[in-house]
Length: 592
Image 1 (cartoon, rainbow, N blue to C red):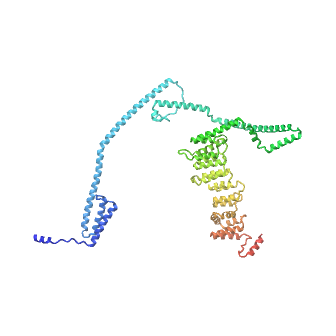
Image 2: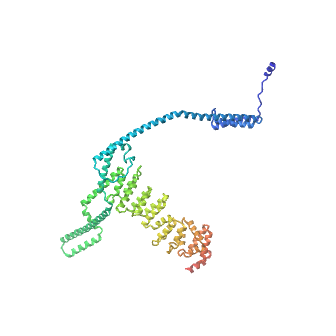
Image 3: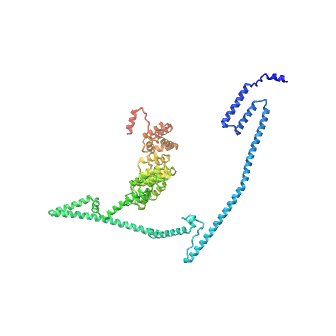
């Protein structure tokens, strides 16, 4: 045995020979393991779940590859899977048990904390009850003292007050403090006294407003009468001074009657020629009037006060001050530009809007409307600040001096705030109607979908220029409006000629819309189209031929043939060939 073993050990044992396909399989397995580990990011060794999934897939690949040991390897894999599942289940159970153990361990401490909190709350309740009883005793004492020192009076039943409700203007701590309550009571008593004095001095009953307005109107009438008498007296003074000058000149001459008559006639003629400037020239005599000089000083002081408020940043007070200034010296575009230059103030209303609102309120109160240009700027400012409510209030409840520019500003803003488009059109219509721009007022009605209302509005006035009706069709094209304008309306003649309207719109950007309108009329039947062409006294046959040619250029052969057939059926209309120029001239001579 030993000899044979020694003899065998002298020869080296050869390693097993691995086939080429087995080598490729092993290399693919290794590359798969490396690539999967890099994908999942498990670069370090550890019991990660990803490792288990990777090697499980590798084991399955080996089982599929090795057919001879497939059953044995499958059994081994199942044992490993069962063992791993048992380990996972054990870890989960251990985790849940650990959590339950922690919860059971914390129960005694939690119970202890709850008991401690209960004792603290009970102590606080006792303290509150003690303070409440003390306050109730103080209230009883105060009531008893008030009953002993104040005489009993019959008072009306007071409304019930919730004792648990806080006193307005006081915190909970101050409502329980006697000194704070006494101070608050004294302040309220002073306020009541001030209000009673104001009721006597600053306010009057609502029933007396009619009497006060009557007194104000009477005072205004007296002032107007005094001003009229003053003007008359100034004119008399002017005539007397002129006559005194004439008399002095006559005395220095030869005192004949003829020069005196000539001078008096010249004076009368001068009065007729300069009748409008007499009062202004006479007023220069009284320019040293103390009342007028005092007024000038007041105006200067008013302007200085406004500038002071404006420089301090008190824009609201400055706006009200400027809007109510005498003679409206600060109600102009220069003051508006001054407020506009301030811009936005953080956390406050735009100063320009304050000034505009103050202007409108002052003009409404004084019943003297603002100039049209200033009203337009005020409306633009309110619209820019999205204050549609202000514009609606100004235009619907008060008479303003409006212009077309104001209506344009409101109309154009409808495209900015499309949610309230109908309201903007309604307000723009009010502005246009006030300044008598009827075509734009009707356009606003059309944009609101009120075509019949627009027609009633247009027929209220004398016939407008044809350009105004074409303006409506250009800015609000539609078959319904086109039909209303080109047909009789409630027994009244049509406002536009059918053919003339088509020709007016044919060479504009509405050309395709004209063709569409013709097609809509043609859909109603050839008789309807023929009736409209025959009854059209404005548009000639040549112009209708031009319309037909336009249809042919736009590849509307059916419409072209229909119009040509209607024209050919008219009595006295003959189609002349284009190449027969002599016959054409002859026929033209016959018609002429």
